[in-house]
Image (cartoon, rainbow, N blue to C red; front, top):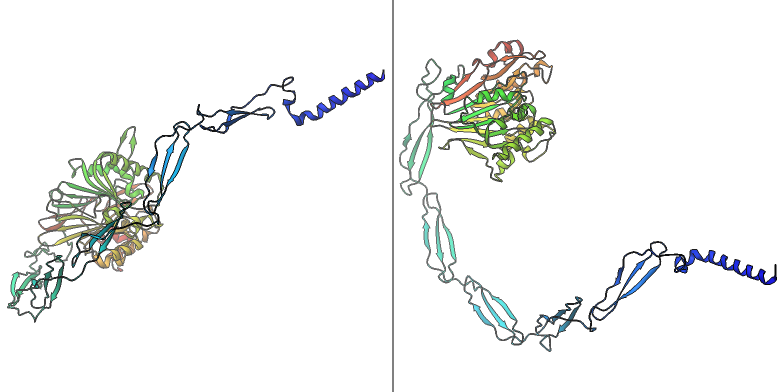
Length: 599
């Protein structure tokens, strides 16, 4: 090998080694035209051009990262902007203005300042001119205008308060024991000043005159008139209490009962159907305790709750159809979200057929519980049924909306044209507050009936428990009642002394299966509980129950009183029960399982 050839080999090896070492650093563009083709991204604008300035765009090789750039030409062919008209904000004496214009080609905005009109930075106002005259009772106004820029400055001219009153004029005479009133008016501004004229002396009354005669059961009234001022004083003449009772225990003069037995008159089914007002406590067709109450006033029907199970719907409908002949329930009240109060609203389903009350009747208005902690399937099914009724035109309110009279709801609904019978939604503390006791969410309602002789009150509290009843008494003015639906099916946890001592019920209807072990094996606490009876016994012996359990495990039940119906007719209260009218303490079940006043 010659020396010249050896040198060639060494030079070639050095070149190859240099190429291998530099290739990762220099990138593929080193051999751009020999070994590699670039794969570029789309062009991206780095700087946009305008009418007078060029722009720049670039793209990058996806393989080697090589960046290629290219100039973007000016947008204007003549190298200048094509501006539109000036948009001007005028200056005044103390403020600079501004004018702007925009290039129609590239959108460039040219802004220039307009100097203030005044050389000293102040307005050159003229004299003040009165624009509205003030007087003793009204402010006036004045203004002045800058002679340079036309700016207008305004100020108030305060009222003088120097009234020009007329003579005093007596608008209400004073007399014995009562103040009068006088007034005077400003002739300028109309301001009116009023002062009290103190009462003078004492009344000088004449003799008492009877205006309404009392009798044995009704108070009378007498009046006397002051000879100075004609003021009328009225006093009550107490009832004599000297009744003339017949064999039926009813006074022939005033209609009061003698209290020897039932405080209501024994009625019948026909009387219930032709009555002014009837209240029905329904049996529910199975061994489970639940609530369902029908109220009928003329052609208006109210259904409160629909327990106790889904299959109760058929039993309820069969009964209701005897009284609701037009297929319309004007009002439905769902007191709370427990199965034994709402399952009948849902009913059973077969294909597209549903037996639930909310599906079977046209419903005018639903009033339901304002709160719940329930997430049960029956509650969800109830919500679906309510939504079905709502889509059919039913108005749906909570008791809270009724109490506060929001969204079209009312706290009082009249059931008759003469507005003598009203359904009144009471306030429950738990409309606004949460509780872990679902029963305390119950909707509470007072039914009031005014007759020529007296006012009857009927109270419905759902399953309200001790705390709920306590708040009910505290937040409402409750009257004594003719009829009370026993709280929570006659449970020992409801119908507390705090409530009973206020309402003093004359009659109590209990929707329950007497002696049921559905909720407890403790015989003393099965419905109606001994504690419940002990408390109610202080006020009445007239306790009635719908159903009797014969064997709960076997599903055997029978009627106690059956369907319990109280109705009003001829200004008297009647009772008819589908099985018998026997009061609870006289039943065989009671004698075997309960005591009355400790005996």
